[in-house]
Length: 528
Image (cartoon, rainbow, N blue to C red; front, side, top):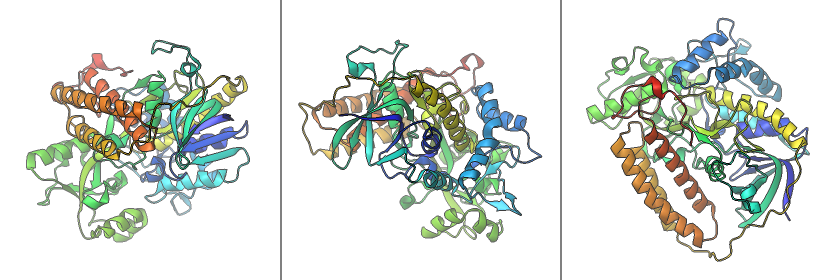
C-alpha cells in the first residue's frame, strides 16, 4: 500500500526544510533525503545570504548588482521581487533562532565580489550550516513532519505511470508523488502526495573537481526532465575561482568573502595579476575571476595560483574565517603567514527546472526551489550569496501556492507498484565507478570553464556511449543509489552539453572560443 502525505519534499537543504516548516500547518509532510538530514549543499555554504539591511544600501543597488553579474539574462521582475523580500526572510531566520555574526549588537554585514555595498548576512564562515541547524531545530518533533533519511527518490509519479502516453509537448502533466528506494532495506515504495517540492540541490558531481558534497548528483533535475518538465539555462555552471589546491582537500572552498576582506591573488613569484583582466581585480564577479585564473594558469604553465591574506590582522581572520583557518591548518597551511594555493572548481548551477515567480514548474503539483530551480534570478551568472536568498524566498512563495493547490487536490488511485521483474542483483560496481569517472573527466576537459564547438561535439559523442552502456546495465539490474545517481549525472551532462551547443555566443558563465563575444540577439533563456 502506498504511503500518503499532503506534501512531499525531496531534499533536506534550506529550501526543503523552510518549505516544510511553512506547509506543516496545512497538512502532513514527508521529507525524503538520501543521506542524513544535515547533508546538503546548504550545509556547505560558507559565504552568507545577501540582503539590503544597511541604511546606506538600497534595493535598487542590489537589483543592479544582480543584473550586472547575470550578464543580461536575469528577469528584472524576479530580481526586484527577491531583493525586496530579502529582509523579511532574514527576520524569519532570526525568529527561528539563527545566530548570525554581529558587531556592536547589530548584524555584521560582509561584502563579496560583485556587490556595491556590505550586505552579506553571515555566521562567520559557516552560514549554511547555521541555517540548516536552525531549520532542523525548528522542525524537530513537529507532529506533522516525518523525515525519511537514507531514502532515495527514483522517479516522479505522473500520468505516465497510470498508462497515459506523456510527451514533451503535453501541457497537462501532473505529479502525484514519487517512487522511493529505502537504501537500507533496498525495497522501493510509493509515496503519494498532493503537492511535491523538488529541493534536491545542484549537480557539481558531474564534474571531476567540485566544491559540492558527493550527494550533488542533480537527482531532482534529472527526474523532472524524465517526467517531461521544462529545464532551462543548464549551460551556466559557475566555477568557484578559489578552492584549496591540496590533493587530500577535495576542492575545499575558500569563500569569496576572503577576497571581500582583502585577499589578493598572486602567482608563485608573488606577482598580482587580476587587474590585468578586470579593473575590479579580486572583487570582480566570480566567473571573471575563475576564467582569469584559468587563463593565467594555461599561459604560465603553473598548476596553481595563491590567495594571500597574510596582510590581514590575524584576529580578523580568526573571527571571520575560523573554519577555513582550521581546515587549511589541517593541511599544513597557516593562512596568517602563508599563501593559500587555489584553483577553480565547479561550484553552482545557475540553471535547473524552470519555475515561475511562485516556484511552480511546468508540471501540475510539482514545485521547485533552491539550486534545482531556474527562477530567473541568476541569469547567466549568480551574484555571490544570492543563492541562499533565492532558496528562502522561493520556498516561502512556493509554500503559499502549494498549500492552496493541496486543498483543491484529490488523491490519485491506480498507481502501480515499482516493477523490477526480470532484473537481478549484479555486483558490477566497477562498471558504475568507471563510467562515472569517465563522465566526470569528459565534462571537466570539454565542458568546463572554456568551451568550443569541437570540445562540445566530442563530449556529446563520448557521453552518448556512457549513456548507452549505463542504460543497458540499468534495464538488467535492480536499482541502487550508485546506479541511479550515475543515470542522473548522465542526464544532467546531456542537458548541459545540449544547452551549451545551442548557445552561439559567450555570456556569463558560458565562454566559447568559437563565439567569444556576447550577441544581444541571443539574449534569451535556453529551454530544453
